[in-house]
Image 1 (cartoon, rainbow, N blue to C red):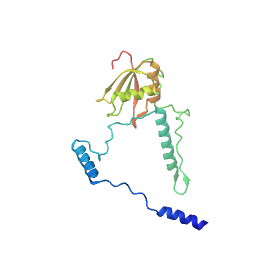
Image 2: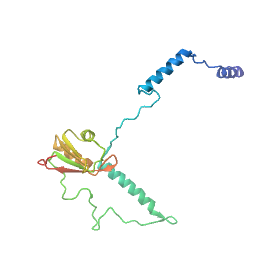
Image 3: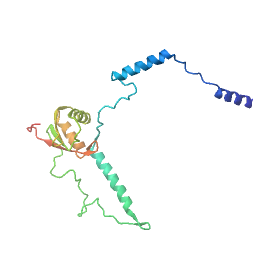
Image 4: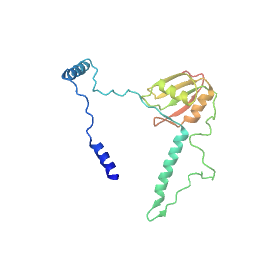
Length: 196
């Protein structure tokens, strides 16, 4: 029984496949003419469509940037810890200031306000190739409604007026020190009397 079943599977594998139906000479000539006419008209059937000129923009929170930097620093320190024949190198304790107290975050100086009632912010160091509509869409999804915006390409700065002050504060709190497409940005409050 085993021999006969393997014989049939081998015979089925070696059986000739069905051939594609043959085209007549007139059909081949008509297809060729059609293809040449499309090439002359500018619609090249062989040409692959070119990708659109869109850019992918991604926004990274400042907390995520700090977390990544901390992980990179820890991995660098671990690599430096072991030298020679397995002897451990002593590293200074960076977590404490000389007075023994924990160090304060560098991105939040004492004089910086925690919250602001202003609805206007400016975003510094934006990528040069980003258009206002994409920035506005990105920040609206991240925080809230934006009433108006402007981009100053010479200074790589974007200015936005939010509908609510808490949305402007959320942008500052979450994205000051963050990144747009890998480029570090800074978010600063503006007074409501300043023009965009």
